[in-house]
Image (tube, rainbow, N blue to C red):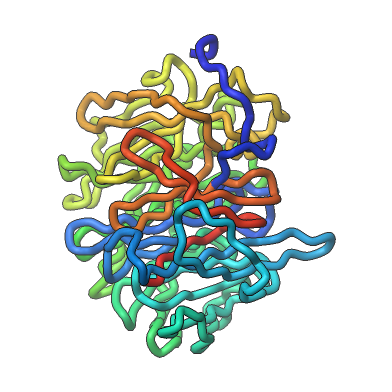
Length: 430
């Protein structure tokens, strides 16, 4: 496979492909894994965009549609984020001139078509709500702090926010190993759900950016890496939260690690894959991580299928692969590494974020198969923003700009919008 892939590092060179790269689980660009996504609701929910699921699953388009993009601009000593709204996804270039300025790295979420945007930053544990006015402007409408629960920062994925009702939402926090239950209508803290059984000495607990809604349960996926970012332990976990009772069930597996991406397939199983960072660690040093894998989880039984384990390298002629993306029509995709095109340092987080990964359709089932698609390579650590059946991949070009690219059934489509800085969140307000 290495001898047949001939692609340039277009995104690193400021080329046409740019999008939402999962490059850190906090505000630092030095850690692997974190940006934004959304939930993909099934069996009673609806898809959410920009890091949150909730009411309404309508796609993009329409004269009255309004989208919010939150982008981060790097300064010499600190960073500034901007909230920018747009109605145009036909290739528009967004300006920060009229955007709402926020200190630090901001993430934002909200239920698709919900008319509300909830914003947190890496500088504190406060969530600020902005309501969309009839004129299409954003109006500040309240705050809630999670500091009393021990949080000091809101710097992970926007997908850590999940909205299940107008008056109920969750925030999954790896740094304190808990799920915050809060009221987005009243902007009040409700309680915390303990996840301390997921804490291990010398390891960092992280959550994937695209939880799933299956019936009345919310499924989040956990992964671990060592504190020095050098190793990935063989451990996967699915956290199931009953959205009526807040009861938490945790299922674990120890056959491979950094399994943080999932899709609910037609056979009723949730298929889970190693994220690109875990695949990159294995590629750099096989002793530091097991081969990236595909696992299968039974949401009805609440347990992993012990008879199912696929080494992803066997699907791609020994090349590593990871990062399971959910495209239009709930079609899953994987990203496979084109190692011959990588010219960066031997650092897993850099490899995972570099545009040297090929998009491939995944067919799930007892004997999974893949189909590599034509097109330019992508960064390996990216997260889709889904609004109904419309899916977008905002991909970064260095630290300077972002283009939001539509993901179509056949692969990458047109550029929907572009913005200065790194766009960590993308939400459809109406």
